[in-house]
Image 1 (tube, protein in one colour):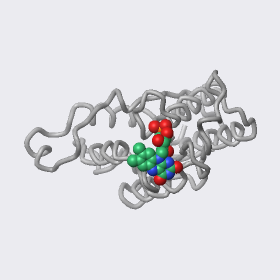
Image 2 (spheres, rainbow, N blue to C red):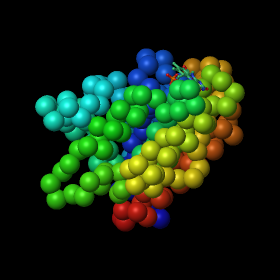
Image 3 (cartoon, rainbow, N blue to C red):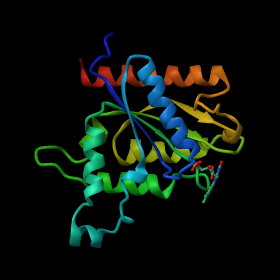
Image 4 (spheres, rainbow, N blue to C red):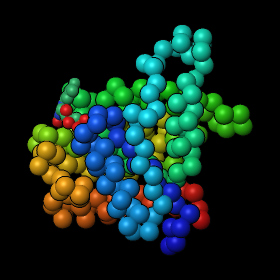
Length: 197
Ligand SMILES: Cc1cc2nc3c(=O)[nH]c(=O)nc-3n(C[C@H](O)[C@H](O)[C@H](O)COP(=O)(O)O)c2cc1C
């Protein structure tokens, strides 16, 4: 299967400068490219949006950065999100981003088209022992039930993230990195099947 037309987007549900989840997303993009897949890393810190408020939307419309981020998602066919778990749930940054993007309406497109026509894969990193996987469940619910997205059943967690990375951004545990690579390749294949060549 030629995956030459497949483009993967990697981003994190944290904008923190030293975010472990941004490290996972960055590493994912590196692994994808090292395996011949076109990939982009995006930092949500570059797309600041106000807290979603329907009155604000009615008054000012969709923020420019939500439109930009929706357009960025659209030029990719597979999307990997690494997100921290905040109190066993999704981060406000990720939820707010998904909420604003879900309000974007493009003429001639059905609502939520950007979610319904892409394949997603999820991961998480945490200094804790569970790697933030409980938060992934919430993100999965939002994407699948709320936004109609296809989300791969496989997910990738980095527990004890403070000790997990080498200085070059790779994971110290080679098996863990191989598992991540396998998930990325699966995401690319699934995206290719959904979109065609
Ligand atoms: C409000 C808040 C709630 C948190 N709740 C959890 C949690 O439920 N489980 C967990 O493993 N870590 C939790 N953490 C710790 C985060 O995993 C940790 O801050 C992590 O480094 C955040 O991800 P980042 O490095 O990508 O920014 C929480 C942190 C914050 C600020």
